[in-house]
Length: 376
Image (spheres, rainbow, N blue to C red):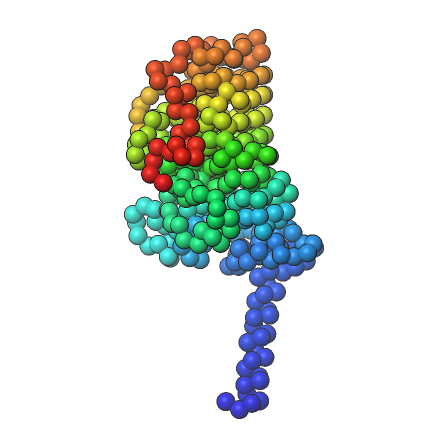
């Protein structure tokens, strides 16, 4: 190739690369703009490293992983302050049938979590206006150091397996706003969102204006699971058709009748203006630290699950605070914290003051560090 021809070829390559970069990560109106076919992770990394432009706007379409791994999109302490916002409700999915053609589970999912929100994220980090779907209990431990730079944090089965749609880990307190968490499955826990603070509760995850629908878990918390020592505030969210306990789990499993939302001992959930309707059970809360205000619990009697145990709206093994809630269904309240004068308890809502034999209280620490019942 002559020097002139080589120069022309090099210029052509540079133009193609330049054009692709402009289209893929257009920087305008104070944001990085991403379009279908672009690499989400690269755009988020660019925003993390940019001096001032920290907003990533994802335009309408479907975004799928281009290779097998732990997450389609991950944010860690490098990305603190980045805002990822959808335009026109784009879909983030765990599935790529072209790379996982088998009809056997977990195909066509090829990532553990659709989104991973790791250690070091503050409430300045926002995920909003997205549809998140397609998780199907795919599990790998590849590229762990890239996702979570702090290698002193111990990773176990719950780190890799829980949280099909979103996994939130350790000192991570992002804001999740106006999300549709739909059609995700995980094992052991949380087809939807898994929060694993491990007592690093200097802050709380804020979840508001979100819909959780048709999520499943092998064991606990089909839609939302607060593992031992976690904290979250959930405002104005809808939970419908979520099913936990879809299988026996692995190893020693003391859980067989969990709700769409599970709160473990040592955790705290503040829930306001939320509706749980048509799930396989409502909420099972083992902490005694949670507060439920202005919420509706009704008809959480959906079929499904590994064992056909009686359904319930609320199971408050250690108590909590319940105010101005409408509850239409079975209540388990051994600590007598649900006061009829402060809540509207339907005629079909008998209050059981006796916990089941060997109630959930006896499972304290099941998800705590060093106390896991399943192999790590």
